[in-house]
Image (cartoon, rainbow over all chains, first blue to last red; front, side, top):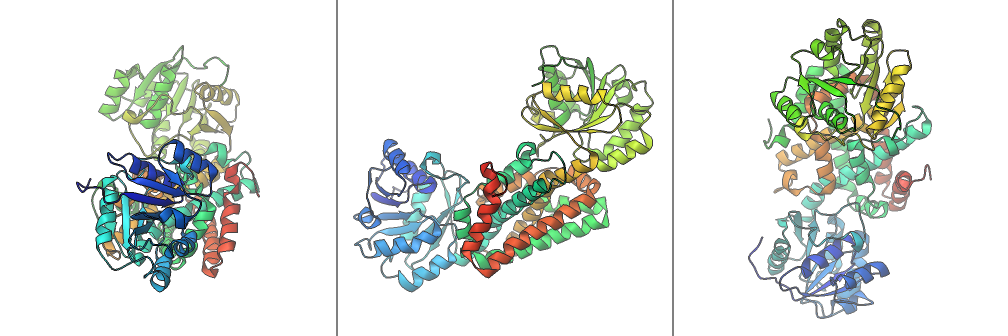
Length: 296
Length: 296
């Protein structure tokens, strides 16, 4: 954890669901917590955020909420971000550091560079690897970011705001990793978007097999073991959010799917040959990095 | 839970790792526990099983352990089962009900029908959907089977032993589902073997991407979020056990992989078209069964 002093005094959190709500809770757990102002369209999130003391005050619109804030956090779905930029760009928030918590960066970065660079000059995009299939502040936890990686992608050129945001996340117990927008999207295509693609596909396959009644009495809902339960947890993630994320990371994700298909092809070929020894060698090699080593 | 009396008085558990050990623990948690005799090659499993009082006595060989038992449970890896059948087939255990806990049934069933039908006439194969990536009795829990499904596949023709085994599992809190060997292998190909295939492939892809250093600073080991952590938990399963399982279920698993590839193709095609609305419709339709309904 960083030893630096907390770098912000008034934080506007636009969107107080799982991620924004957890951030508000984490901020209010600090010894000297900043003031927090929020916006949300969800009356229940609003009620709980106030009841827990995580948000000091809600405003009706985003422009009002960012007034006087030295940090603005957009905790809304990726596709809603440019619209929120528009709403706050006209305010006197240009001295504030601005961030978002979006899971995909490339297309936002393009939009920012072409239209919001001057209105929001201190912009560093954040991605805490701490989401889940859950939504809403009811599921939020003040410790959500502890021990997690937060990718930091500077959208504007200047560096002071990167240091401040890095301090913020490290004070909350996270590790920060600076990364370009395109590298970010490549990384998360493999360790976040692809797991979701696979989970959705496997869920649909299991349901198709069930509906075909090919195996009488089969029902994945009651008969699942540990591995399928894990897959289902991933597949419980919001289709609306993930259609947004997949679409925004389309090109890179398609490439990752192709590479995944190659891996599947390797395993399939060995399986087809029916050589158990070769299969065991392959699985041992593939799982070797789990024991802490790199390549075997 | 069944109201029936516990149908066995002396249970031989051949192999006291995670599954066999948990079964021993579950049996010893009953109000009137049966006598338990075990075998294992692992001195630590043996020590812990005795220390916990889960196994009353260990024997050096399987033939000695089954002597006088009215239930024999083979809790060894699938590939080791025929050899254990050979060891116990010559004993006077033909009055005992015999079961195993193997994750794959088809090839065992063929071997049984061709060579062990007469020596082990009361045979019902069990598959508790309760395994995990863990191994050894140190990870075993007496409650492992509670709330889980146990598939029951009768290998011999008679029915009395099916009822007894069904009673046993239900007394331990599980739900039993009778299923043929080939239907069993089709079901688990989709809800257990395929998740493991996908997890192994995704782990290797992530490691390849890391080694290529295509995204400087990328390391899935420290940067993983919830979904990749779940995938890794599945991929931590023993390569030795899973090479065995995949090989024994080769034909059906190859078919399941092909069908999975079709699902991936559907998602890929919509992603390629770049229509977010169509993608959202697809994901909503695919995840609809999670909300309790069947097809949308």
